[in-house]
Length: 532
Image (cartoon, rainbow, N blue to C red):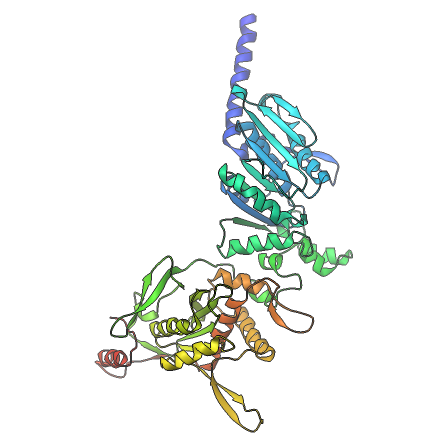
Protein backbone atom coordinates (compact mmCIF):
# COMPACT_ATOMS: atom_id res chain seq x y z
CA UNK A 1 0.00 0.00 0.00
CA UNK A 2 2.85 2.32 0.92
CA UNK A 3 4.67 1.56 -2.33
CA UNK A 4 1.48 2.20 -4.27
CA UNK A 5 1.09 5.66 -2.71
CA UNK A 6 4.75 6.49 -3.30
CA UNK A 7 4.53 5.39 -6.92
CA UNK A 8 1.39 7.45 -7.40
CA UNK A 9 3.09 10.50 -5.86
CA UNK A 10 6.10 10.00 -8.13
CA UNK A 11 3.86 9.74 -11.18
CA UNK A 12 2.02 12.88 -10.20
CA UNK A 13 5.30 14.71 -9.67
CA UNK A 14 6.59 13.50 -13.04
CA UNK A 15 3.43 14.79 -14.71
CA UNK A 16 3.78 18.13 -12.91
CA UNK A 17 7.44 18.40 -13.82
CA UNK A 18 6.58 17.70 -17.44
CA UNK A 19 3.92 20.41 -17.34
CA UNK A 20 6.31 22.87 -15.67
CA UNK A 21 8.82 22.29 -18.43
CA UNK A 22 6.19 22.73 -21.12
CA UNK A 23 5.05 26.02 -19.58
CA UNK A 24 8.64 27.28 -19.13
CA UNK A 25 9.30 26.50 -22.76
CA UNK A 26 6.11 27.96 -24.22
CA UNK A 27 4.26 31.16 -23.34
CA UNK A 28 1.38 29.93 -25.48
CA UNK A 29 1.16 26.81 -23.33
CA UNK A 30 0.65 28.99 -20.24
CA UNK A 31 -1.97 31.09 -22.04
CA UNK A 32 -3.89 28.26 -23.67
CA UNK A 33 -3.85 25.80 -20.78
CA UNK A 34 -3.60 27.60 -17.46
CA UNK A 35 -4.56 31.28 -17.79
CA UNK A 36 -7.82 32.64 -16.41
CA UNK A 37 -8.77 36.31 -16.61
CA UNK A 38 -11.54 38.50 -15.26
CA UNK A 39 -14.51 39.30 -17.46
CA UNK A 40 -15.16 42.77 -16.06
CA UNK A 41 -18.28 43.26 -18.15
CA UNK A 42 -20.01 40.18 -16.73
CA UNK A 43 -18.18 40.14 -13.37
CA UNK A 44 -17.03 36.55 -13.89
CA UNK A 45 -13.87 34.50 -14.14
CA UNK A 46 -13.24 33.13 -17.61
CA UNK A 47 -10.68 30.86 -19.22
CA UNK A 48 -8.54 32.88 -21.61
CA UNK A 49 -9.30 32.07 -25.22
CA UNK A 50 -6.92 33.96 -27.47
CA UNK A 51 -8.39 35.84 -30.39
CA UNK A 52 -6.64 35.47 -33.74
CA UNK A 53 -5.35 39.04 -33.48
CA UNK A 54 -3.83 38.28 -30.06
CA UNK A 55 -2.32 34.94 -31.03
CA UNK A 56 -0.70 36.51 -34.08
CA UNK A 57 1.36 38.98 -32.03
CA UNK A 58 2.64 36.53 -29.37
CA UNK A 59 5.92 35.85 -31.29
CA UNK A 60 6.58 39.61 -31.48
CA UNK A 61 5.98 40.03 -27.74
CA UNK A 62 8.46 37.26 -26.99
CA UNK A 63 11.15 38.03 -29.58
CA UNK A 64 11.23 41.84 -29.94
CA UNK A 65 13.68 43.65 -27.67
CA UNK A 66 11.99 46.95 -28.55
CA UNK A 67 8.24 46.81 -29.09
CA UNK A 68 5.63 49.55 -29.42
CA UNK A 69 1.98 48.53 -29.50
CA UNK A 70 -0.67 51.01 -30.66
CA UNK A 71 -4.14 49.70 -30.05
CA UNK A 72 -7.85 50.24 -29.88
CA UNK A 73 -9.52 50.02 -26.49
CA UNK A 74 -10.40 46.72 -24.83
CA UNK A 75 -8.32 44.29 -26.86
CA UNK A 76 -6.65 42.59 -23.89
CA UNK A 77 -3.05 43.76 -24.32
CA UNK A 78 -2.64 44.64 -20.63
CA UNK A 79 -3.80 41.14 -19.67
CA UNK A 80 -1.29 39.67 -22.14
CA UNK A 81 1.46 41.87 -20.69
CA UNK A 82 0.58 40.76 -17.14
CA UNK A 83 0.67 37.09 -18.19
CA UNK A 84 3.96 37.66 -20.03
CA UNK A 85 5.88 39.12 -17.07
CA UNK A 86 4.48 36.38 -14.81
CA UNK A 87 5.66 33.73 -17.29
CA UNK A 88 9.12 35.29 -17.42
CA UNK A 89 9.32 35.45 -13.60
CA UNK A 90 8.31 31.78 -13.31
CA UNK A 91 10.96 30.60 -15.75
CA UNK A 92 13.83 33.05 -15.13
CA UNK A 93 15.94 33.34 -11.96
CA UNK A 94 17.50 36.75 -11.26
CA UNK A 95 14.72 38.37 -13.27
CA UNK A 96 13.37 41.91 -12.85
CA UNK A 97 10.32 43.34 -14.60
CA UNK A 98 9.43 47.03 -14.11
CA UNK A 99 5.96 48.18 -15.10
CA UNK A 100 5.35 51.93 -15.16
CA UNK A 101 1.81 53.27 -15.15
CA UNK A 102 0.28 56.75 -15.05
CA UNK A 103 -0.69 56.61 -11.35
CA UNK A 104 -0.42 54.46 -8.23
CA UNK A 105 -3.95 53.17 -8.80
CA UNK A 106 -3.04 52.05 -12.31
CA UNK A 107 0.18 50.46 -11.05
CA UNK A 108 -1.75 48.50 -8.42
CA UNK A 109 -4.34 47.49 -11.02
CA UNK A 110 -1.65 46.07 -13.31
CA UNK A 111 -0.14 43.94 -10.53
CA UNK A 112 -3.63 42.83 -9.50
CA UNK A 113 -3.97 41.32 -12.98
CA UNK A 114 -0.72 39.46 -12.42
CA UNK A 115 -2.09 38.18 -9.09
CA UNK A 116 -5.43 37.26 -10.67
CA UNK A 117 -3.67 34.99 -13.18
CA UNK A 118 -1.13 33.71 -10.65
CA UNK A 119 -3.70 32.80 -8.00
CA UNK A 120 -5.49 30.55 -10.47
CA UNK A 121 -2.40 28.64 -11.52
CA UNK A 122 -1.67 25.30 -9.88
CA UNK A 123 0.49 25.95 -6.79
CA UNK A 124 3.12 23.52 -8.09
CA UNK A 125 3.40 25.58 -11.28
CA UNK A 126 5.09 28.61 -9.68
CA UNK A 127 8.21 29.00 -7.52
CA UNK A 128 7.75 29.81 -3.81
CA UNK A 129 6.62 33.38 -3.19
CA UNK A 130 9.19 35.31 -1.16
CA UNK A 131 7.10 38.48 -0.77
CA UNK A 132 3.84 39.88 -2.06
CA UNK A 133 2.69 43.48 -1.71
CA UNK A 134 0.27 45.66 -3.61
CA UNK A 135 3.06 46.83 -5.94
CA UNK A 136 5.68 44.07 -5.94
CA UNK A 137 5.93 40.29 -5.95
CA UNK A 138 9.11 38.22 -5.54
CA UNK A 139 9.67 34.54 -6.37
CA UNK A 140 12.41 32.40 -4.82
CA UNK A 141 14.32 30.26 -7.30
CA UNK A 142 16.90 27.59 -6.65
CA UNK A 143 20.26 28.79 -5.38
CA UNK A 144 18.72 31.76 -3.60
CA UNK A 145 18.07 33.80 -6.75
CA UNK A 146 14.98 36.00 -6.86
CA UNK A 147 12.65 36.99 -9.71
CA UNK A 148 10.75 40.24 -9.18
CA UNK A 149 7.79 41.97 -10.78
CA UNK A 150 7.56 45.58 -9.65
CA UNK A 151 4.72 47.88 -10.69
CA UNK A 152 5.41 51.59 -10.24
CA UNK A 153 3.55 54.88 -10.65
CA UNK A 154 5.02 57.58 -12.85
CA UNK A 155 8.33 59.01 -11.69
CA UNK A 156 10.69 60.81 -14.04
CA UNK A 157 13.68 58.70 -12.98
CA UNK A 158 11.75 55.64 -14.21
CA UNK A 159 13.91 52.55 -13.84
CA UNK A 160 17.09 54.64 -13.79
CA UNK A 161 18.58 53.04 -10.65
CA UNK A 162 17.76 49.49 -11.81
CA UNK A 163 18.76 47.14 -14.59
CA UNK A 164 15.44 45.47 -15.49
CA UNK A 165 15.12 42.62 -17.93
CA UNK A 166 11.75 43.98 -19.05
CA UNK A 167 10.39 47.52 -18.90
CA UNK A 168 6.71 47.91 -19.73
CA UNK A 169 5.26 51.41 -20.06
CA UNK A 170 1.53 50.78 -19.89
CA UNK A 171 -0.97 53.30 -21.28
CA UNK A 172 2.02 55.43 -22.29
CA UNK A 173 -0.19 58.06 -23.93
CA UNK A 174 -1.51 59.03 -20.48
CA UNK A 175 1.95 59.73 -18.98
CA UNK A 176 3.07 63.35 -19.30
CA UNK A 177 6.73 62.59 -18.52
CA UNK A 178 6.93 59.40 -20.58
CA UNK A 179 9.82 60.71 -22.69
CA UNK A 180 11.89 61.50 -19.58
CA UNK A 181 11.03 58.11 -18.09
CA UNK A 182 12.11 56.29 -21.23
CA UNK A 183 15.34 58.27 -21.58
CA UNK A 184 16.22 57.68 -17.92
CA UNK A 185 15.38 53.98 -18.03
CA UNK A 186 16.82 52.88 -21.36
CA UNK A 187 20.55 52.86 -20.41
CA UNK A 188 19.83 50.30 -17.69
CA UNK A 189 17.68 48.24 -20.04
CA UNK A 190 20.39 48.25 -22.68
CA UNK A 191 23.01 47.23 -20.13
CA UNK A 192 20.89 44.25 -19.10
CA UNK A 193 20.20 43.39 -22.79
CA UNK A 194 16.58 43.77 -21.77
CA UNK A 195 13.27 44.38 -23.42
CA UNK A 196 11.09 47.50 -23.70
CA UNK A 197 7.35 47.26 -24.40
CA UNK A 198 5.34 50.46 -24.90
CA UNK A 199 1.54 50.07 -24.89
CA UNK A 200 -0.69 52.99 -25.88
CA UNK A 201 -3.95 54.16 -27.39
CA UNK A 202 -4.13 56.88 -30.04
CA UNK A 203 -5.73 59.55 -27.85
CA UNK A 204 -4.47 62.71 -29.55
CA UNK A 205 -4.96 65.12 -26.64
CA UNK A 206 -3.41 62.80 -24.04
CA UNK A 207 -0.25 64.20 -22.38
CA UNK A 208 2.08 61.44 -23.60
CA UNK A 209 0.70 61.10 -27.11
CA UNK A 210 3.44 63.17 -28.76
CA UNK A 211 6.15 60.80 -27.53
CA UNK A 212 4.17 57.70 -28.52
CA UNK A 213 3.51 58.91 -32.03
CA UNK A 214 7.09 60.12 -32.54
CA UNK A 215 8.41 56.67 -31.55
CA UNK A 216 5.86 54.97 -33.78
CA UNK A 217 6.60 57.21 -36.77
CA UNK A 218 10.34 56.69 -36.23
CA UNK A 219 9.67 52.95 -36.37
CA UNK A 220 7.86 53.37 -39.69
CA UNK A 221 10.78 55.41 -41.01
CA UNK A 222 13.23 52.81 -39.65
CA UNK A 223 14.85 55.59 -37.63
CA UNK A 224 14.74 53.38 -34.53
CA UNK A 225 14.77 49.64 -33.89
CA UNK A 226 11.27 49.34 -32.43
CA UNK A 227 9.02 46.64 -33.81
CA UNK A 228 5.54 48.10 -34.12
CA UNK A 229 2.16 46.45 -33.67
CA UNK A 230 -1.18 48.04 -34.51
CA UNK A 231 -4.49 46.54 -33.39
CA UNK A 232 -7.59 48.16 -34.96
CA UNK A 233 -11.07 48.08 -33.47
CA UNK A 234 -11.85 44.98 -35.57
CA UNK A 235 -9.21 43.05 -33.58
CA UNK A 236 -11.99 42.39 -31.06
CA UNK A 237 -14.00 39.62 -32.73
CA UNK A 238 -17.15 40.44 -30.78
CA UNK A 239 -17.63 43.85 -32.36
CA UNK A 240 -20.22 44.16 -35.13
CA UNK A 241 -19.39 45.75 -38.48
CA UNK A 242 -21.27 48.94 -37.55
CA UNK A 243 -19.52 49.18 -34.17
CA UNK A 244 -18.15 52.70 -34.68
CA UNK A 245 -21.47 53.94 -36.02
CA UNK A 246 -23.11 52.63 -32.86
CA UNK A 247 -20.56 54.48 -30.74
CA UNK A 248 -21.43 57.72 -32.53
CA UNK A 249 -25.15 57.01 -32.19
CA UNK A 250 -24.66 56.48 -28.45
CA UNK A 251 -23.41 60.06 -28.11
CA UNK A 252 -19.63 59.82 -28.61
CA UNK A 253 -18.06 62.51 -30.78
CA UNK A 254 -17.03 61.08 -34.15
CA UNK A 255 -13.43 62.26 -33.71
CA UNK A 256 -13.28 60.67 -30.25
CA UNK A 257 -14.52 57.38 -31.72
CA UNK A 258 -11.65 57.46 -34.23
CA UNK A 259 -9.15 58.13 -31.43
CA UNK A 260 -10.40 55.38 -29.13
CA UNK A 261 -11.25 52.90 -31.87
CA UNK A 262 -8.97 53.54 -34.88
CA UNK A 263 -9.57 51.50 -38.00
CA UNK A 264 -6.26 51.98 -39.80
CA UNK A 265 -2.70 52.69 -38.81
CA UNK A 266 -2.88 55.97 -40.70
CA UNK A 267 -5.96 57.01 -38.73
CA UNK A 268 -4.28 56.05 -35.45
CA UNK A 269 -1.13 58.12 -35.96
CA UNK A 270 -2.58 61.10 -37.83
CA UNK A 271 -2.26 64.56 -36.32
CA UNK A 272 -4.84 65.75 -33.79
CA UNK A 273 -6.25 68.29 -36.20
CA UNK A 274 -6.22 65.52 -38.80
CA UNK A 275 -3.44 65.16 -41.32
CA UNK A 276 -3.87 67.32 -44.40
CA UNK A 277 -3.15 64.25 -46.51
CA UNK A 278 -5.57 62.12 -44.46
CA UNK A 279 -7.18 59.29 -46.39
CA UNK A 280 -4.73 59.76 -49.27
CA UNK A 281 -2.19 57.82 -47.17
CA UNK A 282 -4.49 54.97 -46.16
CA UNK A 283 -3.16 52.37 -48.58
CA UNK A 284 0.50 53.38 -48.48
CA UNK A 285 1.67 50.74 -46.02
CA UNK A 286 4.41 48.96 -47.99
CA UNK A 287 7.38 51.23 -47.25
CA UNK A 288 10.81 49.63 -47.25
CA UNK A 289 14.40 50.80 -47.27
CA UNK A 290 16.09 51.26 -50.64
CA UNK A 291 19.69 50.66 -51.65
CA UNK A 292 21.97 53.31 -50.12
CA UNK A 293 24.68 54.81 -52.30
CA UNK A 294 25.90 57.83 -54.26
CA UNK A 295 26.15 59.07 -57.82
CA UNK A 296 29.54 59.63 -59.45
CA UNK A 297 30.48 61.15 -62.79
CA UNK A 298 33.46 59.82 -64.76
CA UNK A 299 35.90 61.80 -66.90
CA UNK A 300 33.69 61.33 -69.95
CA UNK A 301 30.66 62.77 -68.16
CA UNK A 302 28.73 59.53 -67.71
CA UNK A 303 27.00 59.03 -64.35
CA UNK A 304 26.85 55.76 -62.42
CA UNK A 305 25.49 54.64 -59.06
CA UNK A 306 27.82 53.18 -56.41
CA UNK A 307 26.50 51.37 -53.35
CA UNK A 308 27.60 53.11 -50.14
CA UNK A 309 25.86 52.72 -46.75
CA UNK A 310 26.84 56.32 -45.93
CA UNK A 311 25.67 57.74 -49.25
CA UNK A 312 22.99 60.41 -49.58
CA UNK A 313 21.07 58.46 -52.23
CA UNK A 314 18.39 55.87 -51.48
CA UNK A 315 17.45 53.99 -54.61
CA UNK A 316 14.47 51.70 -55.13
CA UNK A 317 14.65 51.27 -58.91
CA UNK A 318 17.42 51.86 -61.47
CA UNK A 319 16.59 53.43 -64.84
CA UNK A 320 14.54 51.02 -66.93
CA UNK A 321 17.29 50.58 -69.55
CA UNK A 322 19.69 49.23 -66.89
CA UNK A 323 17.24 46.61 -65.71
CA UNK A 324 17.42 43.02 -66.91
CA UNK A 325 14.84 42.37 -69.62
CA UNK A 326 15.00 45.84 -71.21
CA UNK A 327 13.16 45.67 -74.54
CA UNK A 328 15.68 47.99 -76.26
CA UNK A 329 13.06 50.73 -76.63
CA UNK A 330 13.55 54.25 -75.35
CA UNK A 331 11.04 56.60 -73.70
CA UNK A 332 10.43 60.33 -73.77
CA UNK A 333 9.66 62.30 -70.59
CA UNK A 334 9.69 59.16 -68.43
CA UNK A 335 11.56 60.64 -65.44
CA UNK A 336 11.21 63.84 -63.46
CA UNK A 337 12.69 65.27 -60.25
CA UNK A 338 11.71 67.73 -57.55
CA UNK A 339 13.76 69.14 -54.68
CA UNK A 340 13.45 71.14 -51.50
CA UNK A 341 16.70 72.93 -50.59
CA UNK A 342 18.24 73.82 -47.24
CA UNK A 343 21.35 75.77 -46.29
CA UNK A 344 23.14 72.54 -45.44
CA UNK A 345 24.18 73.59 -41.94
CA UNK A 346 22.72 70.63 -40.06
CA UNK A 347 19.14 71.68 -39.22
CA UNK A 348 16.66 71.19 -42.06
CA UNK A 349 17.32 68.84 -44.97
CA UNK A 350 17.67 69.16 -48.70
CA UNK A 351 15.45 66.41 -50.13
CA UNK A 352 14.92 65.41 -53.75
CA UNK A 353 12.91 62.62 -55.35
CA UNK A 354 12.99 60.98 -58.78
CA UNK A 355 9.68 59.80 -60.18
CA UNK A 356 9.19 57.16 -62.86
CA UNK A 357 6.16 58.58 -64.65
CA UNK A 358 5.49 55.37 -66.55
CA UNK A 359 5.22 53.40 -63.28
CA UNK A 360 3.75 56.46 -61.51
CA UNK A 361 6.14 55.79 -58.65
CA UNK A 362 8.88 57.55 -56.68
CA UNK A 363 11.98 55.42 -57.27
CA UNK A 364 14.91 57.40 -55.85
CA UNK A 365 15.61 59.86 -53.03
CA UNK A 366 18.49 62.20 -52.23
CA UNK A 367 18.68 63.61 -48.71
CA UNK A 368 21.29 65.56 -46.74
CA UNK A 369 21.49 68.35 -44.16
CA UNK A 370 25.24 68.83 -44.63
CA UNK A 371 25.57 69.70 -48.30
CA UNK A 372 25.56 73.35 -49.36
CA UNK A 373 22.93 74.61 -51.77
CA UNK A 374 25.68 75.09 -54.38
CA UNK A 375 26.94 71.50 -54.11
CA UNK A 376 23.37 70.20 -53.92
CA UNK A 377 22.90 71.35 -57.52
CA UNK A 378 25.79 69.09 -58.57
CA UNK A 379 24.07 66.11 -56.88
CA UNK A 380 20.77 66.93 -58.59
CA UNK A 381 22.45 67.22 -61.98
CA UNK A 382 24.07 63.80 -61.59
CA UNK A 383 20.77 62.22 -60.54
CA UNK A 384 19.05 63.85 -63.51
CA UNK A 385 21.65 62.51 -65.94
CA UNK A 386 21.47 59.02 -64.43
CA UNK A 387 17.72 59.03 -65.06
CA UNK A 388 17.82 60.12 -68.71
CA UNK A 389 18.15 63.87 -68.16
CA UNK A 390 15.10 63.92 -65.90
CA UNK A 391 13.57 67.38 -65.72
CA UNK A 392 14.18 69.13 -62.37
CA UNK A 393 11.86 71.41 -60.39
CA UNK A 394 13.59 73.11 -57.45
CA UNK A 395 11.88 74.98 -54.62
CA UNK A 396 13.72 78.22 -55.29
CA UNK A 397 12.93 80.24 -52.13
CA UNK A 398 15.99 81.14 -50.02
CA UNK A 399 18.81 78.64 -50.51
CA UNK A 400 17.02 77.21 -53.52
CA UNK A 401 17.99 80.26 -55.59
CA UNK A 402 21.64 79.28 -55.24
CA UNK A 403 20.81 75.75 -56.41
CA UNK A 404 18.83 77.04 -59.40
CA UNK A 405 21.67 79.33 -60.52
CA UNK A 406 24.21 76.55 -60.23
CA UNK A 407 21.94 74.20 -62.21
CA UNK A 408 21.81 76.86 -64.93
CA UNK A 409 25.61 76.90 -65.04
CA UNK A 410 25.62 73.12 -65.29
CA UNK A 411 23.10 73.31 -68.14
CA UNK A 412 20.79 70.97 -66.23
CA UNK A 413 17.31 70.20 -67.52
CA UNK A 414 15.16 72.50 -65.34
CA UNK A 415 11.45 73.18 -65.62
CA UNK A 416 10.38 76.72 -66.39
CA UNK A 417 7.36 78.29 -64.73
CA UNK A 418 5.42 81.10 -66.40
CA UNK A 419 4.32 83.78 -63.93
CA UNK A 420 2.54 87.12 -64.18
CA UNK A 421 4.70 90.22 -64.16
CA UNK A 422 4.47 92.81 -61.42
CA UNK A 423 2.19 95.05 -63.48
CA UNK A 424 -0.11 92.21 -64.37
CA UNK A 425 0.22 92.91 -68.11
CA UNK A 426 3.44 91.01 -68.66
CA UNK A 427 4.46 87.45 -68.12
CA UNK A 428 7.90 86.27 -67.14
CA UNK A 429 9.54 82.89 -66.93
CA UNK A 430 11.47 81.53 -63.98
CA UNK A 431 13.18 78.28 -63.15
CA UNK A 432 11.84 76.13 -60.36
CA UNK A 433 8.96 76.71 -57.99
CA UNK A 434 8.59 79.73 -55.73
CA UNK A 435 7.06 79.14 -52.29
CA UNK A 436 4.08 81.20 -51.16
CA UNK A 437 1.00 80.11 -49.25
CA UNK A 438 -1.05 80.16 -52.45
CA UNK A 439 1.58 78.12 -54.30
CA UNK A 440 1.96 75.76 -51.32
CA UNK A 441 -1.76 75.00 -51.39
CA UNK A 442 -1.46 74.24 -55.12
CA UNK A 443 1.59 72.04 -54.57
CA UNK A 444 0.13 70.14 -51.61
CA UNK A 445 -3.23 69.71 -53.27
CA UNK A 446 -1.59 68.17 -56.33
CA UNK A 447 0.55 65.91 -54.12
CA UNK A 448 -2.48 64.79 -52.12
CA UNK A 449 -4.34 63.99 -55.32
CA UNK A 450 -1.39 61.94 -56.58
CA UNK A 451 -1.05 60.03 -53.29
CA UNK A 452 -4.70 59.10 -53.51
CA UNK A 453 -4.73 58.12 -57.20
CA UNK A 454 -1.33 56.59 -57.91
CA UNK A 455 -1.19 52.88 -58.61
CA UNK A 456 2.51 52.77 -57.74
CA UNK A 457 4.01 51.85 -54.38
CA UNK A 458 5.22 54.59 -52.04
CA UNK A 459 8.45 53.15 -50.66
CA UNK A 460 9.75 56.04 -48.54
CA UNK A 461 8.62 55.65 -44.92
CA UNK A 462 9.99 59.08 -43.99
CA UNK A 463 7.77 60.78 -46.56
CA UNK A 464 4.75 58.89 -45.22
CA UNK A 465 5.65 59.91 -41.66
CA UNK A 466 6.00 63.58 -42.56
CA UNK A 467 2.70 63.55 -44.43
CA UNK A 468 1.10 62.28 -41.21
CA UNK A 469 2.14 65.46 -39.37
CA UNK A 470 1.28 67.91 -42.17
CA UNK A 471 -1.69 70.01 -41.11
CA UNK A 472 -3.75 73.01 -42.14
CA UNK A 473 -4.32 75.35 -39.20
CA UNK A 474 -7.37 77.50 -38.51
CA UNK A 475 -5.95 80.34 -40.63
CA UNK A 476 -5.53 78.05 -43.64
CA UNK A 477 -1.74 77.92 -43.34
CA UNK A 478 -0.19 74.63 -44.46
CA UNK A 479 2.87 73.05 -42.89
CA UNK A 480 4.21 70.45 -40.48
CA UNK A 481 3.21 70.35 -36.84
CA UNK A 482 5.40 72.40 -34.51
CA UNK A 483 8.77 70.73 -34.07
CA UNK A 484 8.31 68.44 -37.10
CA UNK A 485 10.12 68.45 -40.44
CA UNK A 486 8.41 68.88 -43.79
CA UNK A 487 11.32 68.72 -46.23
CA UNK A 488 10.23 65.38 -47.71
CA UNK A 489 6.72 66.68 -48.34
CA UNK A 490 8.07 69.74 -50.14
CA UNK A 491 10.51 67.65 -52.17
CA UNK A 492 7.75 65.23 -53.18
CA UNK A 493 5.43 68.14 -53.97
CA UNK A 494 8.03 69.69 -56.28
CA UNK A 495 8.47 66.29 -57.94
CA UNK A 496 4.77 66.19 -58.70
CA UNK A 497 4.95 69.74 -60.10
CA UNK A 498 7.76 68.59 -62.38
CA UNK A 499 5.60 65.69 -63.54
CA UNK A 500 2.62 67.96 -64.24
CA UNK A 501 4.92 70.29 -66.21
CA UNK A 502 5.62 67.53 -68.73
CA UNK A 503 3.25 66.00 -71.23
CA UNK A 504 2.53 62.28 -71.16
CA UNK A 505 5.53 60.00 -71.34
CA UNK A 506 5.67 57.79 -74.42
CA UNK A 507 7.66 54.84 -75.71
CA UNK A 508 9.67 55.49 -78.87
CA UNK A 509 9.46 52.72 -81.45
CA UNK A 510 12.73 52.29 -83.40
CA UNK A 511 12.32 53.81 -86.88
CA UNK A 512 14.80 51.54 -88.68
CA UNK A 513 17.59 49.02 -88.27
CA UNK A 514 20.72 50.32 -86.61
CA UNK A 515 18.82 53.07 -84.76
CA UNK A 516 20.03 51.99 -81.29
CA UNK A 517 23.76 52.37 -81.95
CA UNK A 518 23.32 55.82 -83.53
CA UNK A 519 21.01 56.92 -80.71
CA UNK A 520 23.44 55.80 -78.02
CA UNK A 521 26.31 57.60 -79.70
CA UNK A 522 24.23 60.75 -80.05
CA UNK A 523 23.28 60.50 -76.37
CA UNK A 524 26.89 60.17 -75.28
CA UNK A 525 27.80 63.28 -77.22
CA UNK A 526 25.14 65.17 -75.24
CA UNK A 527 26.54 63.89 -71.97
CA UNK A 528 23.66 61.51 -71.30
CA UNK A 529 24.28 58.18 -69.55
CA UNK A 530 22.95 55.19 -71.47
CA UNK A 531 23.41 51.53 -70.80
CA UNK A 532 26.74 50.17 -71.94
